Length: 242
View 1 (cartoon, rainbow, N blue to C red):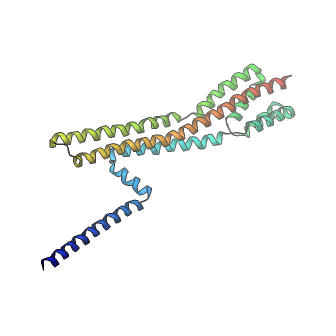
View 2: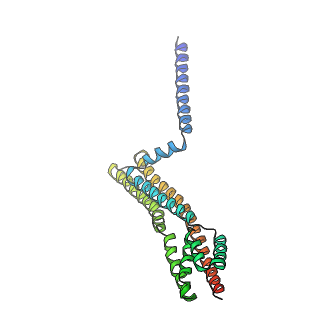
């Protein structure tokens, strides 16, 4: 009888162990089946609303500035070689006024610089060159508008993450001092929050840095086109005056 009872107890323990293992496997499968967005959302919530909200605000504002600059720079990009050819043909056929009309009908900073130079060409090549240089500086300022804000968000996001980390570690040590003993379960939550703020701050900085580098490269390309076009315009005006 005792042997039968022992066998039944062992079978019951085996069933309970199998059930527990199955439940653990099901939980692991559920965790694995979560999408990246769901996991990211859960980690964001665990990081705490205070610093994580500010880091998210930096990402939103930074992306807004980046998208606005990318759209503006793409609209400001001009086929400089084609524009120079049109202006040169207009100067040869219809003079300065025809060339100015071509520039008026063309968008972008290069066309605007051409127009300013052509508009002052009647006062001499020196005046035209000064107008081109001065207006080139104005156009460069327009291209770089709000880019400093993007670099600010890139710097602030990881700093906020590090600040959240420091505050989380301070809270963890305060709990240790209050309880009087070191327990992993006691401080694990605070340390997790601290590390999550750093991770999200770095992610935001990396994303914005990619956009920033693209924008800077785009600005450099447009500025180089502006400089080359300015030299070409002065040469065209000099040839036209002869």
